[in-house]
Amino acid sequence: MLFLELLGYLVVILVAAEIFVNALEHLGEKLKISEGVTGSLFAAVGTAMPETMVPLLAIFAGTGNAQVGEEIGVGAILGAPLMLSTLSVSLMALAVLKRRGIQGHLTPERTGLKRDLDFFLIAFSLAFVALFIPHGEGWVRAAIAFVMVLIYFIYVMMTLRASSKLVEDGHATEAGSPMLLTRLGLPQNMLFIIVQLAMGLALLVVGAKGFIHGVEAAAPIIGLSALLLSLMIIPIATELPEKVNSILWIRKRKDTLAFGNITGAMVFQGTLLPAIGISLTPWAPQMEVLLGVVVTLVAAFWLRWAALNGGLRVWHLFVNGALYVGYLTAVLI
Image 1 (cartoon, rainbow, N blue to C red):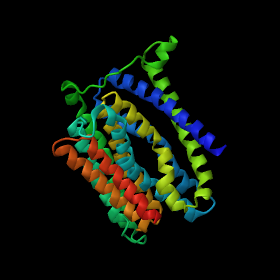
Image 2: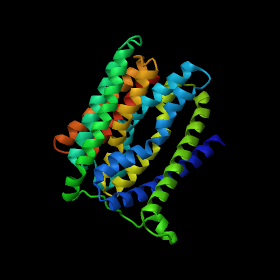
Image 3: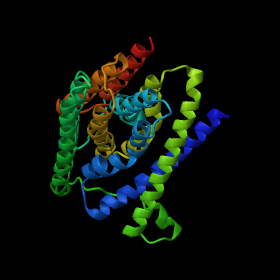
Image 4: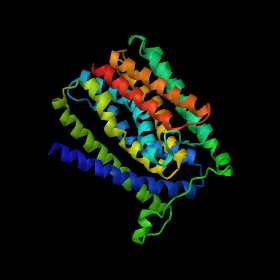
């Protein structure tokens, strides 16, 4: 019964992602913005809502046990970028392996991808450093958290500023199919684009939240700690919107949108959420946490290096997947 419930919520997420992606393409086309802005800002922040809520609720609302709440919060904060930089990108490779082959090229707009990964690597490196700062050094932690929030603000400004030039160079957002609501006879205007976006986002949150509860119910059967659960299992559910959206886009050869959706979410989740974790939780270098942060940084750096040295190929993304398998093996053993 539990697994049928999980399957049902998975179907909800898949349907919601299609509704959301369709509306988002029409919004980007209507606003005449680049695929980079649509993927890295709009899609990334929109689909990041489910996994953003988990650590915030765990830290602020609590679970009845403050320590467990903090562990779930820290694990969810750090587990999301880990999942995105490893498993999510390898699933994109798997989705196009048959069509493009193991040596096939992936062609996201390079400057936007580099910008996303540069900002993420800087911010997440600060989160890594903060692990070793004693909780008593509150002002140092507060300063690091402030810098991380500032990094995201600068990132948003630079991404928006680059949009008009990218549109001129042929990277404007283009909708690949009619809007779903217009097929029901409704007009295709800004109001109904927003309505469809809201419908898709609401379904994404409902589906992901239900999936999380199902996974949590299954956790005692698996026998994992709260920290390991939040690092390994919760992100699988909360990152489903990004995974599904990016797979839909990359199968349509919209590589910039596909990568921007993931790397933009990495920047969002590698700046604002760790800033909250650094300020409000112990944020200590436990083995699982430390290894997860290191693997995430290595995966992001590998993606950046591959993109700027001959261009991304399908097999490059499978290396990121192997890093995730290595991480799982290490923490479970």
